[in-house]
Image (cartoon, rainbow, N blue to C red; front, side, top):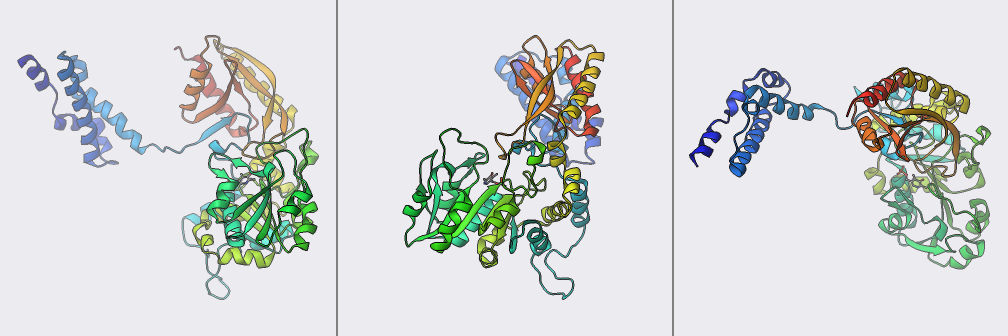
Length: 470
Ligand SMILES: *Cc1c(COP(=O)(O)O)cnc(C)c1O
């Protein structure tokens, strides 16, 4: 009993720990209470240990200097950003978990210009009257897509929700069973429709839907014919889909709204790069679809946003709906979106300046050279792992072009001791973090989504992690 008492008395006082230099220095950035709390937590843990075990604690662990250092590590975590830079060596260009599209330098400048001060976000500088925030991108969007009108909101899920709610609340929307998609964890077309108060009328089967299926489903309460891009999967084999163009005469005859959720929304045709043929937004507009929705941060290569283009009278309804206010786009996003869209005025410029399109269209030979260079650096470092240059495929990801595989190259790193998963973790927790694929107990490093200016750093990080003894 008294032994324990003595041990407890040997614990240093909080004040004594706080007087240590490391913590005194931290006082410039953090309040005293945060530092005290960290020190108290450490002492409480030690006290618990003594009470439970009755064992003496080594004198080293009780030194105020060591306790202060421990407390400082904990306190400094508060000052570290949780959201931080990642080097994407997965070969997936639009990784939703890695923040989808990186922005162009132009978009970054635009954000910078608007962020630090005031802007004409909602004021018409000519008349001095109140303006609308989406007016800043509307004429660009109508020019680039050929649509009569446009509106932008927070993201594409919001765009779909707004369009369905504003146009179809209490009425029926007809959708093919093959298009009732779930994208990511939370976006499911049936759920969005329910949230928007739209009655879902499913037609056809998962693999085959015919025009007569739509015809039969139409009744007095039908308002919308909805097409949804099956962004992240494909039904292949015995399939039948009714295209928007085939649906149009039916929509016109029955006076229904034809809406298409395109998901990714390409503004320019990329099939000349040997990729899957996808209808572009201008083509869908031209085909006569009334309302079209797509994301800003998928293949468009801009910030997270939901873009809606289409018939003027319908877009007007969306603007006036209370949800439009709740889903509104913020000024930084708007600035980035405007400058991203401006690059599309000259498509060659978009291809060159937008990181996603640039990576997307890079030739396999170029990738091979970059991999070869990295390979040589790793070889020269003499790692305790077998490194091979292998053929690989890259993907677009992020719910766009599920079947598109870009032929590519990668480094396969075999650490031998079955440690691939552990090394992948060490790479993820490095600063900056590096995310790679793990396959058959090997690390796969694909550089398609690695920026040229990150290459040297990537090599350094790989070497330092793979060289470290476990
Ligand atoms: C990605 C996607 C969405 C969701 O868009 P967010 O911008 O992520 O909200 C909706 N519909 C389709 C078809 C998509 O591909």
